[in-house]
Image 1: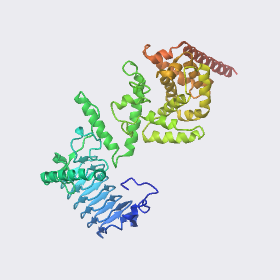
Image 2: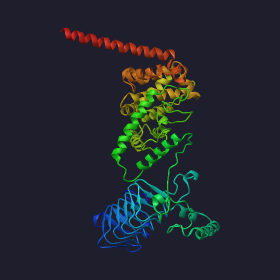
Image 3: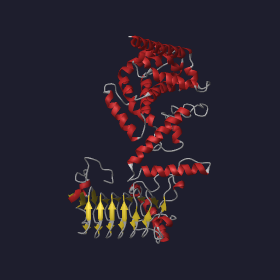
Length: 501
């Protein structure tokens, strides 16, 4: 389970070859036990309740309460221990009277007598939680050096077997040299090394957290950015710890949902206030110094991580890659399912989806400098016959429709052959009009007028406003406004005649 097995690969249906080493048998209460490598001893007075599993050559003392927990090989669980919804790797000792809740313990860890590891904690390989210590929720303990000097982001929390795989792949000569270095380190730090932790460099322990007899320091995630002010540093640390909570076992999903809604509202408010295009050219649609991070989230990323989104993921770029792989011979509903799955996995928005799909459509047009406005319209209409249902399905409001226009703007202002062709009058106007298609297209009159209002409030010298101010585009907007006024007059006249009747 810890190796990320997933259905249909389960403990009683092991991968080919794996069953030669291990074999798990299902016990009462949906609990698996390893039956082949070595007998595990569990006291009669202890209760084990699944789903969970216990590895080989383990010992569980008297009066233990173990529920929903995975225990690796060669683990020693003392008497009176409580384990709930935990993951214990190999060679771990949990001493008498200790409690571990909704946490992960790495190889060779020791939780001493009477200690409590609260929910959401991760104890790195070789760490020791001292006697009677109560670790705060979502604490992470490591023996690695200060992560500010590390090139690797996992800081000792990656695959605990990675070091062994690297040793296997190295040459015999390198292995001999490593062995000599490890022996030297063992002699110097034998008093400080935890069981099974030989060869690890000694680090300063946070004894106020792990206890006087504990070993390990509190891991503080790096912000990734240099900060000039103490205030910014405090904000970044707070955001980093928030991210730890979200990624931890036992985090309250209800609170996560509420925070997502709050952040989404803040993003919407922030986007509506952006006016200075000199400092943030195209940030409203995500282009920052030529980067691709559409959907208006880049400005928020500078302040705080997006809840539920993997760090560094460019959601629109990834969504566009999904759209690029779609074949018109396949139903567009299949693509909608893929986009929705990625959207939920990265806490993206439907605006991100419509932006990505529109960029893909414009890419598939294979625009060249020789294409007239008429040919552009003809090519776009041909593609929309397949893609329009997807855009309409994803457009749940004006923001999504405005993202479609934003993608057209971006393509027109990106430069190159495609950009020069789209930005040349009257190409942009006819492409916009085709998206509208007399009210039957993928963008509505309301969305176009809302987009126009946004551009009228921006700096007149910005590239987007210059594109918006093209004569042919303004003629289309004026015609659209007149049509809207005529419809309003007709509705008003009809209403008056009804009143007279």
